[in-house]
Length: 204
Image 1: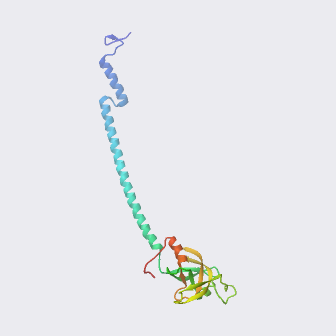
Image 2: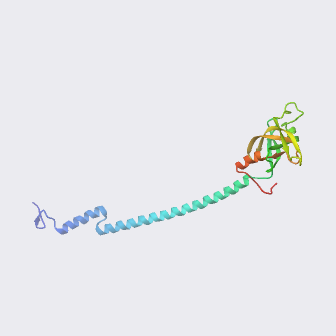
Image 3: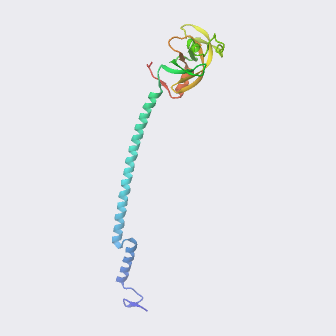
């Protein structure tokens, strides 16, 4: 049997402490020094995480500010696009299925239906009483006030109308007017408002 330190099988205290410190050094950086090194490393890691968190917060604020600026610009652009004038240039499909330019007055007081000028309708084969093909009305309706103080019975035809990229197929009364080819009524304006359009106050 081996004798170490005077007693059989017993390691001297100094030897045991050296062995313990060596093993701690292998696994944790060595005794008190290893613990201090571990704390220092942990502090550095915490500082690094804190800096990263601050950078992320700054980046999020910058992105939020940029997104807000973009949204404001988009709203301004959209406002310019959807703002209608009281008199708009539109297109109407003629009897030969071709688009023809026309001037249209947006009449918010017209609660009945859109009206097409008689001359415009005849010129573009929408309704022509003397013709053999386009002389038949789909139905008739009564208009009040197109001519101030007068009531008239007029024909109704179906037309295709394009305004600001929006296309509508609508019934339209045919009547004599002065100044514009069409008088857009609430039947068209309601659809334009639903699509996000507004009428610019005081614009012509």
